[in-house]
Image 1 (cartoon, rainbow, N blue to C red):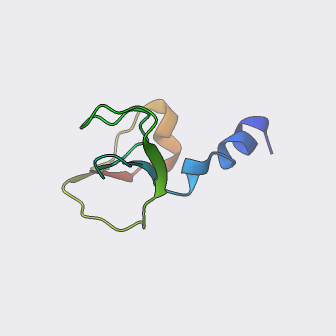
Image 2: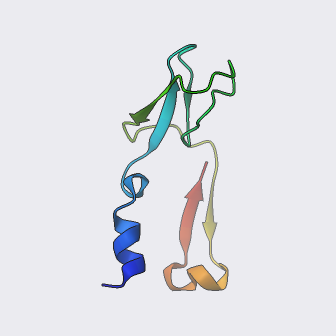
Length: 79
Protein backbone atom coordinates (compact mmCIF):
# COMPACT_ATOMS: atom_id res chain seq x y z
CA UNK A 1 0.00 0.00 0.00
CA UNK A 2 1.42 3.41 -0.90
CA UNK A 3 2.26 5.94 1.81
CA UNK A 4 -0.40 8.32 0.46
CA UNK A 5 -3.15 5.72 0.77
CA UNK A 6 -1.94 4.66 4.23
CA UNK A 7 -1.95 8.28 5.44
CA UNK A 8 -5.39 8.95 3.94
CA UNK A 9 -6.91 5.96 5.76
CA UNK A 10 -5.71 7.29 9.13
CA UNK A 11 -7.39 10.70 8.81
CA UNK A 12 -10.19 10.75 11.46
CA UNK A 13 -12.67 12.44 9.09
CA UNK A 14 -12.19 9.69 6.46
CA UNK A 15 -14.92 7.42 7.81
CA UNK A 16 -16.82 9.86 10.04
CA UNK A 17 -18.55 13.21 9.87
CA UNK A 18 -16.67 15.25 12.47
CA UNK A 19 -17.67 18.75 13.46
CA UNK A 20 -17.52 21.22 16.33
CA UNK A 21 -19.93 22.29 19.05
CA UNK A 22 -19.57 25.67 20.75
CA UNK A 23 -19.66 25.25 24.53
CA UNK A 24 -20.69 28.90 24.89
CA UNK A 25 -23.76 29.16 22.58
CA UNK A 26 -24.44 25.48 21.72
CA UNK A 27 -24.13 25.94 17.93
CA UNK A 28 -22.96 22.94 15.90
CA UNK A 29 -20.81 23.26 12.76
CA UNK A 30 -19.45 21.14 9.92
CA UNK A 31 -16.63 21.07 9.06
CA UNK A 32 -14.74 21.54 12.33
CA UNK A 33 -13.97 25.12 13.37
CA UNK A 34 -11.47 26.70 15.75
CA UNK A 35 -13.59 29.82 16.34
CA UNK A 36 -17.38 29.90 16.71
CA UNK A 37 -18.77 32.04 13.85
CA UNK A 38 -21.86 32.90 15.91
CA UNK A 39 -20.41 34.11 19.21
CA UNK A 40 -16.76 34.59 18.08
CA UNK A 41 -15.27 32.59 20.97
CA UNK A 42 -11.95 30.82 20.47
CA UNK A 43 -11.05 27.72 22.45
CA UNK A 44 -14.61 27.05 23.62
CA UNK A 45 -15.33 24.34 21.03
CA UNK A 46 -15.49 20.58 21.39
CA UNK A 47 -15.22 17.97 18.65
CA UNK A 48 -18.38 16.01 17.92
CA UNK A 49 -19.13 12.99 15.74
CA UNK A 50 -22.34 13.31 13.74
CA UNK A 51 -24.72 10.33 13.65
CA UNK A 52 -24.59 10.02 9.87
CA UNK A 53 -28.22 10.96 9.34
CA UNK A 54 -29.46 14.17 7.79
CA UNK A 55 -31.51 15.82 5.10
CA UNK A 56 -30.36 16.16 1.48
CA UNK A 57 -31.32 19.53 0.03
CA UNK A 58 -29.89 19.02 -3.45
CA UNK A 59 -27.83 16.47 -5.37
CA UNK A 60 -26.21 15.98 -8.75
CA UNK A 61 -24.94 12.97 -10.69
CA UNK A 62 -21.55 13.70 -12.23
CA UNK A 63 -21.19 11.97 -15.61
CA UNK A 64 -18.29 14.03 -17.04
CA UNK A 65 -15.80 14.54 -14.17
CA UNK A 66 -12.37 16.12 -14.14
CA UNK A 67 -9.40 13.85 -14.88
CA UNK A 68 -8.81 13.05 -11.19
CA UNK A 69 -12.25 11.44 -10.84
CA UNK A 70 -12.75 9.74 -14.22
CA UNK A 71 -12.16 6.27 -12.77
CA UNK A 72 -15.18 6.56 -10.42
CA UNK A 73 -17.70 8.23 -12.77
CA UNK A 74 -20.60 8.47 -12.64
CA UNK A 75 -20.80 9.54 -8.98
CA UNK A 76 -23.17 11.55 -6.81
CA UNK A 77 -22.49 14.71 -4.82
CA UNK A 78 -25.04 16.09 -2.36
CA UNK A 79 -25.63 19.09 -0.13
